[in-house]
Image 1 (cartoon, rainbow, N blue to C red):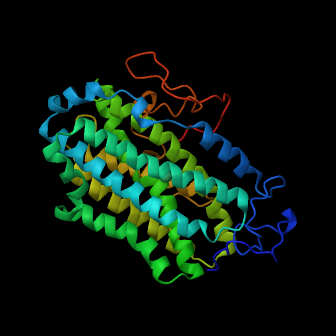
Image 2 (image 1 turned 135 degrees about the vertical axis):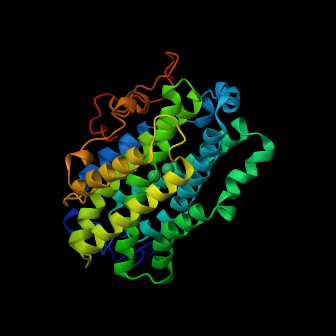
Length: 344
Ligand SMILES: [Fe+2]
Ligand SMILES: [Fe+2]
């Protein structure tokens, strides 16, 4: 894949000459006339989502942590460990993906996404340092070293990104993009559900507050990739069968990990609800890029966790964020009338 030079005086930034990849950009951020106007609106939304983890009060969670069952505590630590991995690899991988994008309006969105992924890691650190006792903290960061299921999962996810770095072909770039879409669109959500479930039982409200902000950011990343993947399918050689196969494997890995760390031991979640939810997510993400659902049947048409929507807060146009048990507004968002945040 060609990567952008720092400055290309021979480039041509005319809108009629722009493309997501293989364009002739000068690399100046010429944003007055843009070809992909959706990117301008998306960037604006991403900026308006601005938040600071330390402004969210998680003191209640410090005591709640000891009122969790041992299984819930193990899941809490394990999910934080896994999410730290996801946001870490995104922070590392996205600059590689971005360096081949030749439409500055899309580069701008990805620059913001990279910043948000970095900040998500910092919000995990804030939770780990505040809630988890010091003697358990490094176990959260190091869990993958001793947990084989997590390690396999991490290696599977990182593998697609690494293949592109080792061999930067257009085919590997396409697969890395698709892997990004799966990470953004599927891999976080069983983790989010765990925290919303605890919040629905009045447990760990500060953590759930943080996760609903992360959830909102992640949905903006999903929207970015929902625009990029159809463009990529029109640009790069690929096979639809390969996409379906990748989705199916992603579902299997996601269920295997969730069953391992959550399983049937947490009130409100079962191995069956995990399977239904993950397949429902896969179908929804496939549909959003113009492909058919992979899993047939009414069972996979709706989320089994609709009762938790009020905790995710993604139905409320992504603006006003109030603490679960207080009325205090915890976001800095200024916009109103933002639509399209109803994916749960
Ligand atoms: Fe993130
Ligand atoms: Fe993300």
